[in-house]
Image 1 (cartoon, rainbow, N blue to C red):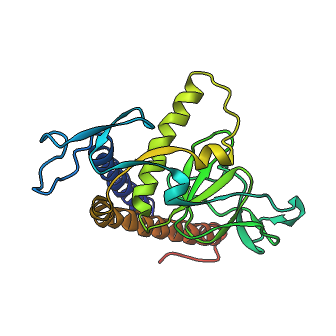
Image 2 (image 1 turned 30 degrees about the vertical axis):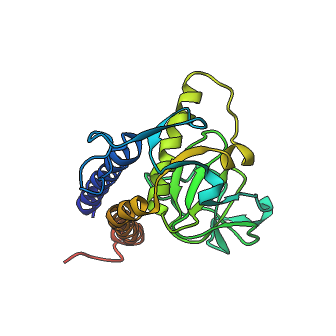
Length: 244
């Protein structure tokens, strides 16, 4: 089981690395394929100065606030008396404590859920450490340490790597010692980004969504194997089960 987990983890690392590289190439360096299939900026594609972003972006792109392209739900914590680890009620994440490499581990539940995140929503930590990111494997309740984000137009893969790009900004603020105890609703809503044409987003989504789906399947298989191991190992140890 361990070898299979290690193999799946390595595949997931490679898939995410490829997706991040493609995002950087298309949306940071602006070398997405133009109408002739050539890299836009490197091939002399027209760049226009954007006053809001204080940099040049490709012609036809525009600056937008995150709230214009994404549905954002700020978490709200249920009563502490509703918390349990007996799997009663709904999965609950207060903050990033149970975050994994990409998906959180289900540990705490609540029988009095308040604010919800839905399967495939981006879970963003808005309290220290700000900027930690995971994806919801299933519907869950989120506490005040998290925000749930999803794309209004179905471009969730683009949004995953765009939020990850914002994370560099949060990491920088933390690294220079800025007091950055929390990310407010207004600050999150008003994060500015260079928004591409829909046709480019569609092309990116078609490529990267395949990677993201494979990462999710691998993660679910790993979790199932881990659950089986945790169930089987004690019985092997006390002799209830024998391996022939």
